[in-house]
Amino acid sequence: MIRKEKMRLNNKGSALVSVLVVTIFISILATTMLYVSAQNYQMKYTDYQNKQSFYGAEHALDSLKAIMIADVQTAYEEAYHEVMRNYLLKGTVQGRKECYQEAYLKKLNELWDGRLAAAGGDCVKMMRDFMTDNGIASDVAERIYKVEGYGESEVTSTETSGGVTTTMTGKQFTIKGIRAMYTSGNYTTFLYTDIGIALPELDLSVDSSQTLSGTAAQRELIALTDCVLYMNWRRADYEE
Image (cartoon, rainbow, N blue to C red; front, side, top):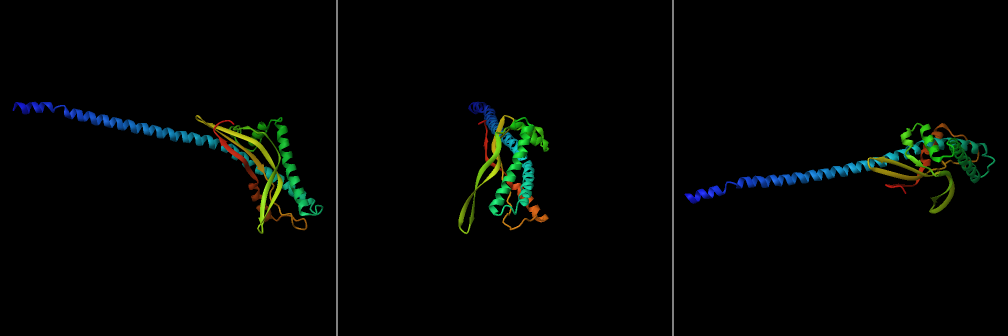
């Protein structure tokens, strides 16, 4: 009886040890889960801030690109009327195309020369003023922090007909070296691009001067939205 009683006394601490082991295990598990959750939250927060900084910079460029469609409209109308006035004098399709292109580029240069002069020769101020004058918020316009300049540039296009590919060269108006940046939290995104204003397509192959019908004019206006395009677009997370 004495031996059995001693054995019972020796088992008294086993339950406490089991509780401690389980408690330690649960603590380790809870700590691990909290650490993983914190890491997951940090990754999501980092991704969110990164996306916010990108969207902020992109919004500035997209807003600028959208309002430049009005320039396409203005230059297109000027060039269209110019080529119609000289349609018979320009006896060939090529002559009419050159007249149309020259008038179009001339009008765009006049528009931007006027804006640059009003900004005192400062390209960045010119761009920001252009944006705010067209209803874009000043804090969005200020995300544009550099503009190298503008002018005519050569473009090359290809056209395939009957199995024969023809390479054509032409000119377009380009605003060069536009840079936008936006910071969200600890993350900053830099976007670099040129914006080209291409010549809208116009059929100049008919034999006599004609005016566009209302329906045709609407089709031309819709096509103008495709004339403003990004060129050499790239993204960076640091200033290049």
